[in-house]
Image (cartoon, rainbow, N blue to C red; front, side):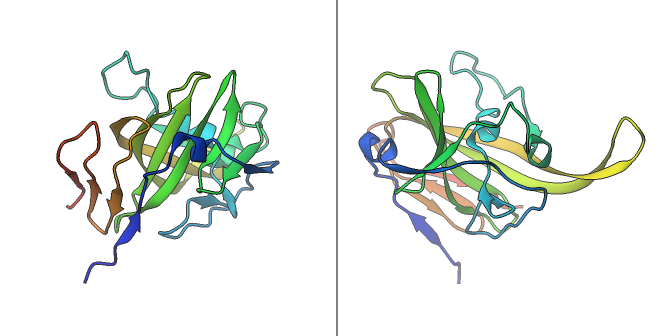
Length: 194
């Protein structure tokens, strides 16, 4: 029997941008992961790290950034923006004139995390995608020659949803089902089986 995590994503744009609790600071250097969370040291992964994987809409090609070091981002000025979490679970930060965020929808049996991202650049649009990432810890070498642990978040791909897409998303062990919406007449199944 497949244990299915069902997440309805028929959330109005107002709900995504609604009240939030600010979470100052960021993360520490130890990953804590489970299939139903997307945390690093007990804190949400900074949305700006996920945003690194989103290419420009005008560039119809694979993403340029395919991995980021979550541990190295800790304590840097580049990723110091306060993170807010809305009542709907959207983890976001404020950009120049807008905001960017993600909702963790679940994880596949191979450790792939499914994130629904949302971007607002100040207008009425809330542009959504699914982004698929996997976290991995390995060793790297500092310039002085000493080894250190790093936590890499790998970009495995994405699926365009559209502006304020209202289709339901279902995540189970091997696949993601993207429900019908004003952008899709029929549901779409994304398979991740081996």
